[in-house]
Amino acid sequence: MASIASQQRRGWVFAWAVLGNLALLGDASHRMLDAAARHAGSSTWPPAELVLAVVFAVGFACGEGHHALARRFVPMLVERAEALRAEPPSWRDVLAPLCVAGLVAAPRARLLRSWGLVVGIVAMVVAIRALPSGIRAGIDLGVGLALAWGALALLRLAAARVRAPAIVLRTDAR
Image 1 (cartoon, helix red, strand yellow):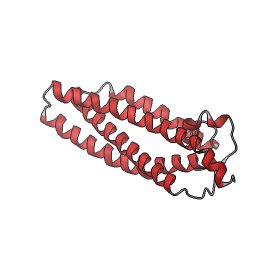
Image 2: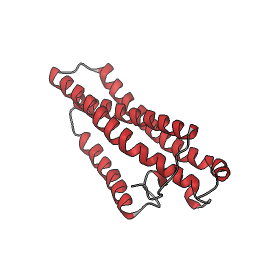
Image 3: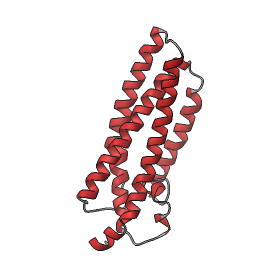
Image 4: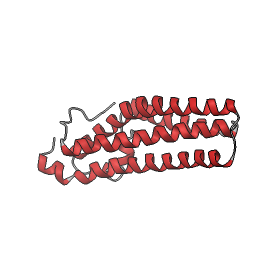
């Protein structure tokens, strides 16, 4: 493990890893919330679609935003960013956002889960395009809220770790 002075000098790797993922979450959240707002401002929702939209929005915000992103993905991402900061400089520094997200240079099981999730998300996007616009807007709202929740959780945890760095015990972070 690197010295504290070395870790402080390599703080840019931690920042690049976290800010790269924060930018991705923030941009995706903005696009989803914008799509939902455009639909809400351009049409009236039948009552059934409105109910489904609220259910999807609350379900995604709580289920994906809190449980999947804030409680599982964000801590893993920050832990991997701290581990990367503690390592000697390498090619992984350039790809830090992808490395800490588990998309590059991760254990085989993590790579399979991460890339499986990417493929699953693409498949869901294709399938959701076939839904009525009101339901699609509700899903967009829910996903946008979930991504915003995840971005805020990442910002909060990363800021806490910058103020009080944790000891990195393992580098293969789930």
